[in-house]
Length: 135
Length: 192
Image (tube, each protein chain N blue to C red):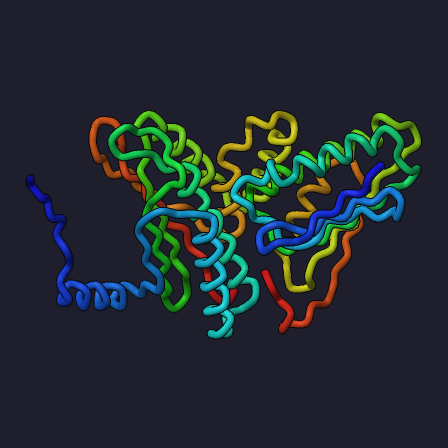
């Protein structure tokens, strides 16, 4: 299947979904007014991927900012990821939730998702150079 | 032909306005259409100003977050003052104030009177939640949003209260029998 790559903008994250490279990631800030439009191709891609997923799919999420509209869309993404596990016996999905050391709010966001989503979350704290803070 | 001239403001008024802003510790005041570009511009401007003033990272990020949410609420939810129908892009008023210990972010837009009870219920419900329970309350709301995508209403207000630890002040000022002006203020504490 075809890879899905969407370059980051100042209000939407970079999306990299590649079965050939075994790389699945969403990185950056997400604050579009209407997030469902932005995340629709991501959901479509995952739906296709769930027909023949790898035994282990590790999705890296490194979001520096999420507005409420994006949180709702991300829920849809997680539901689609849960479906990969449900529809394929033995298939495992893992989320790596990365956040800046000083960013308690983004850590909280990840913990909330972890509690309501039936997927394993790994939390990864990353040191960020203060000069590079860009949200 | 009758030309109706809309009144202009005097320079004295402009000075008074400047004084009023100063006296009320206002650092930003805007009235008009709210587009996504404007939202991004204001939030980024505030972010860099706060950074220059060496405001703590957590506080900067919260102010940025609340500004985006509030401005997007205006863009999405404001109604026409005469018809009460939703307008796109929306318009309204947006104020940011800064006192010694708090940033105040006030948002106002026209709302159809028949929607007031919905918004009032959402805010009163979240304001009534014990601060110790707000995280659990947010998570419950998120869970029900996951189960049915129609139930996400109010998530924005809950998120604001959860992130700021402050209740939302709100007011509805009647305009006519169809519409009112809806105002609410969110507080972000400085230096935790």
